[in-house]
Image (cartoon, rainbow, N blue to C red):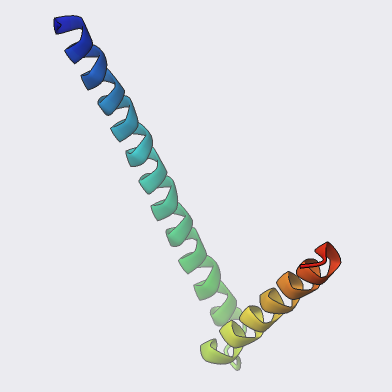
Length: 73
């Protein structure tokens, strides 16, 4: 009985460690993207954030749509 409980605890601990590592990676990615956007707008002061984000979203949408068309979806 003790062994089963210990194995269960070890599995939960491993799962929690993986989740924490994932959350740390996501946080670092967010921080890096914030730095990238800040750098972009510092170098391009005439660009408005809303316009740039809209253009990026439109481009991503068109890429996904073209991929879907190629797949026959």
